[in-house]
Length: 114
Length: 112
Image (cartoon, rainbow over all chains, first blue to last red; front, top):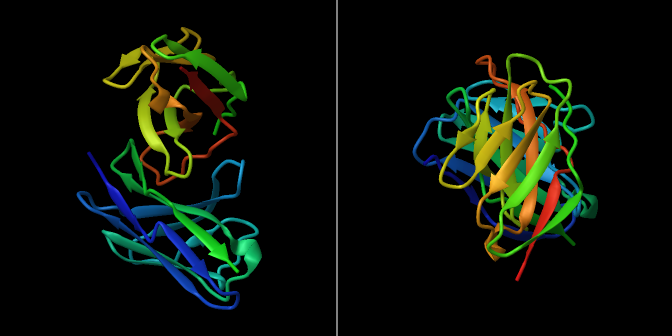
């Protein structure tokens, strides 16, 4: 089946630094990639939607200059958390859309900002 | 997208069937019912989806009521590895690139 590879699985960074999270669709072309974040004991919240070759669409309340999304190819999308702060500590998950029905999720990235 | 309502938690004995209910009383005719699950600290995993007919695959069965206002996900022989949060999601499949919207889900705990 369709697989989305997400790296890194865990990252700890210092406050003020930037972190890049990669998602690759291994056996399908993801024209659309969704980025979610999940705080402890909460559900997944959509942050942004990216379409290959165009600018991402951000949900209300998500700072586009802080969470940079690049979807330069049909198999790779990246999320860069810039100038990270402790409140950005969360579980980040990407999801690639395949065809009409398929949504395949990455395994998630646990970000801890210290 | 139609709103869904699920019980916050359920327990099930290992080896028994787990029946997870979902209410989606405002579902529209073009909206599918999707089920995903999320094991702790992992990404969501697709289980099954359906429109109006009952569906079965190697993981589970999906029973949708005739009026489509509710559905039940059935794990026929639950194992400890089925312990997870189960999400029932309703959304149209019109070809548009719309996201899945997650509610709070049901925490299923399979007990030994």
